[in-house]
Length: 209
Image 1 (cartoon, rainbow, N blue to C red):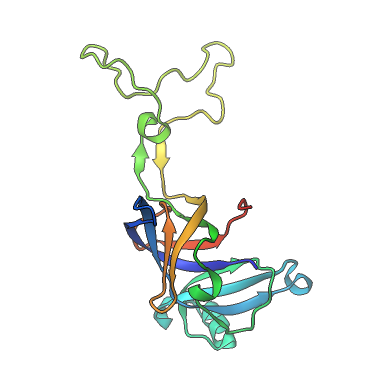
Image 2 (cartoon, helix red, strand yellow; image 1 turned 180 degrees about the vertical axis):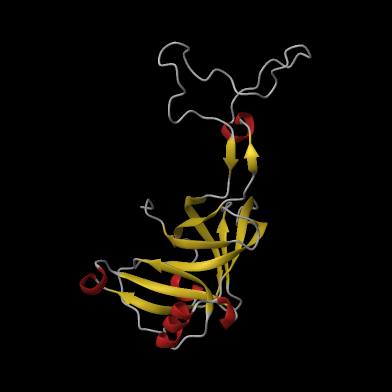
């Protein structure tokens, strides 16, 4: 069974295992998801399910999107995502976190990382700084960009300063520590991408044995 859920990162905490060791954990707030559409190979070219979560105001969605919710008989939601499960779901079906996950499951978490703005090479790529003496005048600047006469240009892919963060990234093989279906809480071991309140998707791990 392919497991998936949409949630909001609430923050980090720490738990204690049976041996008394401290376990860093991330708490994810999960509201029930509702099935908007079942995509098929015959009609769409691939098999997937479109789900929505987190209530919002009707005026904040476009008319075509609103029509999808009316067709499925579901109230307007904020987040819409597609997943590719190996099982079928009914239109308008409610899916809770306790229906999907259990303690000990291995999952992959995807989200948009924190934006750091414009950053230099030392912060962005972890490169070494220049001489720290007062007369060097070259503390945190970019080093050599390549040869002079040949090829006489900066090669593509050169690590240089630029925009850092605010990209979609995935953390793999995290363990589910706790699942609370009544309160809609999913607790994972370790850190996940994004700021507090950021949306994340949790799926079955692709590398777990």
